[in-house]
Length: 146
Image (cartoon, rainbow, N blue to C red; front, top):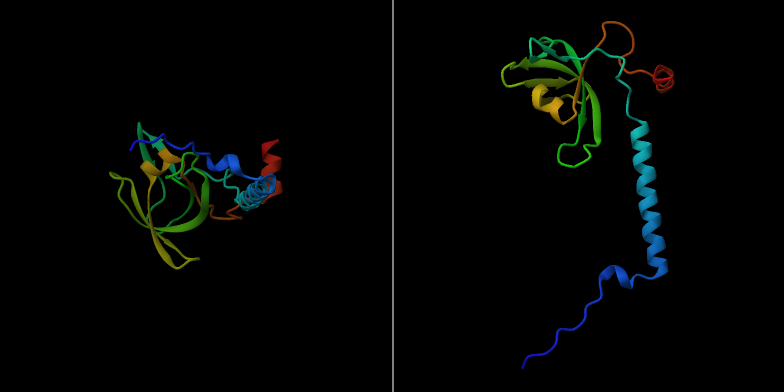
């Protein structure tokens, strides 16, 4: 026999005030954690760009053996949040495809990135200075912003 479908209550409608408060506390804790993580993001704005437009084409300035700073962002999420900023040694460059093979001395690992497609999604490539600090201190970076 045919029967009328039972009325279903959405999951979020049956939350108690205690559950709502717990959920809100969890969200606030995640927001604070993300804010602390973003505070650790090093400032690289003072460094010269390593990928620049030259004759209408994006060109990678560093050569094999040079160091470069790469600031990575997530490419799979809508907002492209910051992932990390690392110093790499350039091992190989394919100027046509944009592929750059890298070596991280700190992590003792290889890496691959693409300076053409990477810049399109928000990666930043910077030259490592010959002298002085690579990363600006937070208070120095804030002075530059004013």
